[in-house]
Length: 129
Image (cartoon, rainbow, N blue to C red; front, side, top):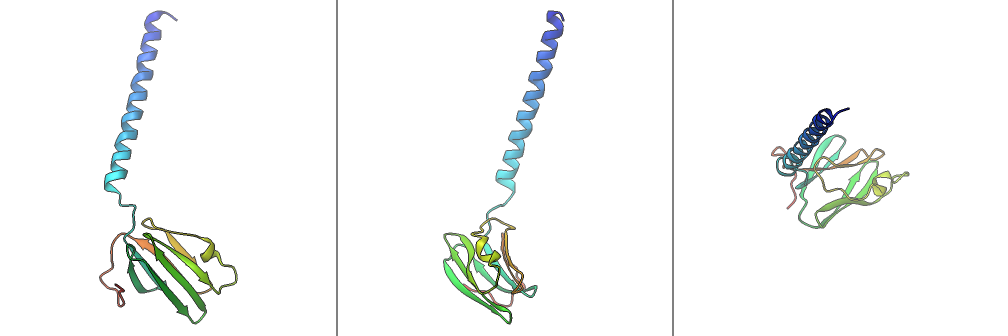
């Protein structure tokens, strides 16, 4: 290989690296500023029906009672979790905190889904302050 081919090869590598860096920066900016990943509301579904919507910024406890059992929902420091439940496997309790848009806690034995969303549904029957 002569010097000219080595320089051409290095130049192509530098251009490829610069293109990858530009793609990474543009992707980061798009995700950071255009994708809303922090949730604003906690929605509680029982038997696939939306029953409550809570503001994620207001700390509270909410007792979810179904014909199958209970779950204790805690909202604290802009995060939500199921603190206690009487289901046998306690997967919902072990899930821990959720706070990002689209995250969910599911309790199959009680038919309960708790999800974080970025917008409030205007068709909600019961909205808590």
